[in-house]
Amino acid sequence: MSYQAYEGDGLVFGVLPYNGAFFTTRAGIVLVDVGCSRATGQAMRQMVKDARLPIALIVLTHYHWDHSANLDRYKDLRCVPIVLGNDSPLLQNGLKHPPESSLFIAKERETVSVGGLEVELLPTPGHSDRGDDLCVWLPRQRILFCGDMVQPQGEMYSHCTGFSPVSNHAFGGSVLSSLQALLALPMETLVTGHSTVLHGERAQRWISVTAQVLKREWELAQKLVREHPRASTKTISRWIFDTLAWERSYSPAAARKRKRNGHFKSYDYPGIAWFVEEAKKEAAAKRCGRRGHADFP
Ligand SMILES: [Zn+2]
Image (cartoon, rainbow, N blue to C red; front, side, top):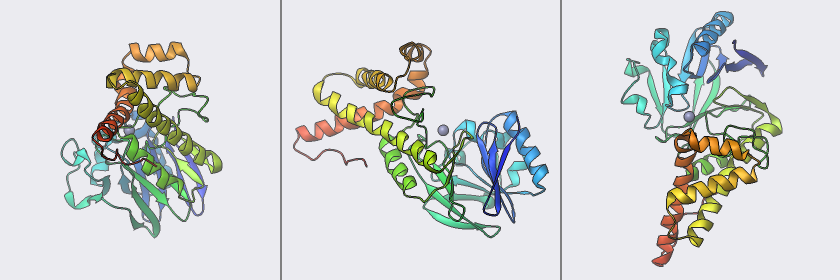
């Protein structure tokens, strides 16, 4: 598989197969994630050769293996300056990327200039269990690289076409705040962490549907915890999954399979359980006469 390139407002940007994206500047190519597969690496090599530019910078949208593992496979990437999100576990382990002087941690929203191109680094915690999510925003070109923040699992809430009726996020409340910040950007193009390029209204819709799914999880968590105060987090989380599967027209057979093969446990349960635990904390606080948990957006 090869890379896909687009032209927009004086720069070339595009996606590598699976989890990687790029854009060009006068100083060279900026890679946004480097993927984990050989196909991604081969396409990256081809793209660099065709562009006849060096790799100037790597930004990792988060530490997850499927976005970062090629850093170790391709030795020539190890001397490229790299930007990581706050508290990235790659700082403590795994990153065979020696020169500390070329590591940059984006703790707050900030603008950097790469080859004369204005690049904004936006910390957007919530998807990664380590809170190191980072989006890349090109304000002039109105292009957003969003990592794994946007996972609607279908074009509409009522019709899931993804692997699962829920998205895979560690901290749903933080994701909702982060998505609200992304929706405020005057975006024209959205490049997801899994190599999908979306334009205009469709880009906004993907963000909105992702938020809608999370809001529904939170609403159901509050309702079910209120109505069944003795039910376990595990039980309520399964009810929420089943309700979203039903509301989103997700196949019952696929839902059963997901529970059997462990995908529910690994990818769906942690995010739903987070909302249920928050709802339980809120209910406990109310019982003690305190105000509940902060409202999510
Ligand atoms: Zn991820």
